[in-house]
Image 1 (cartoon, one colour):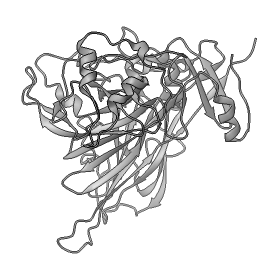
Image 2: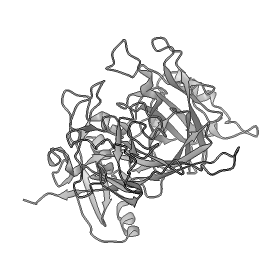
Image 3: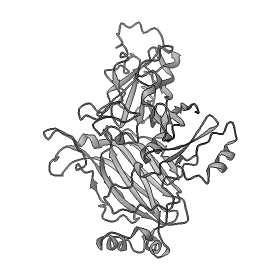
Image 4: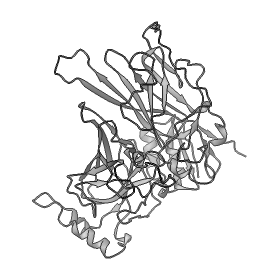
Length: 480
């Protein structure tokens, strides 16, 4: 059954949708599943991840790290959190010591957290290369893991006797973490011992500039009503399930005062529907005096489920190839000539210094080819040319710049409706009632500043982050 309600208050929407067994994005930031659109250890950066259990019940959690090219799993483990407990980890740059990739850039996962995480080397666990398929044997591959996404799943609530294992003792450690190891050593743990997930997880990621003293923090996207009713997916540490395709094939999306409820063929489609967006809008700031730079993170959290077969599946347009990725094509917005995606801003002058600005690409240029993409802004002023790039996040595949000449600050928009075959690649639900246009995207803008007028010896680095504004385009099909 599908329904659409127009122009009703938000609290009414929440009351109506509360009993629906359909996945939806959480307004409160709490849910059963958390999606972190980006982590990085490039450019002397570290990423800190914090996961909170905000409920009175103990929970089993799966933490999955996915590299940035094609969402291949690079580390997966279980954490068992007590009521109102949290899990904190740091991702830092390292050099791989694993056979086959020795000496390549990689990621070290470290944590001082005492929460129960069976088999995890808390002192330092390298990201693993074994999930990186479809790569040439003579090429370096671990640079792929230096940036990516994190996805966190509540697998269920612990029964009372098991919950006692994660109760903290007077010494500040859980009562019996070893019991979790024993359970898994004895074979497959009976999943029926857990009760279904009830949500209440929230998370933050902080990207820290270690040498420059800068930091930005963003909140993870949270999904509620993720699983089919009464379903428990409790897998052993190292098992990559659950993933976003484990969702119930039902979704609810709020857009422009309306509710769109859809049935789908797969769980991945249901989650994609939550993130489907026709446009991405956000701010940019550039400037020579404060050395301002801006980059946008644009991530596709479900992309891997659509681009790895012999033919791509809607809404994506191409299959993944190791050297090229799986690219999204779109053209310029003609009525906003100041940037590739359109922009407004404050004029900084006529740029009469003789510098030639690289023109923006033609519409057929391929962009955003990876699962996690970083795009930088430039305006041809010294320090902000396309050749220099922004280099805030140090993305190794930072392949695309957005020109905003002659603007220094403003807003820019990427509109997917200008791409070729836009209508034919839309995502249509199983009942053919609603069509969701665009792509499943999430992310944020990050800007960095330096106060060049600071007194000698004083560090004056600043950074901020802004979540993207995502414009939706959902069309109700004509009734027969």
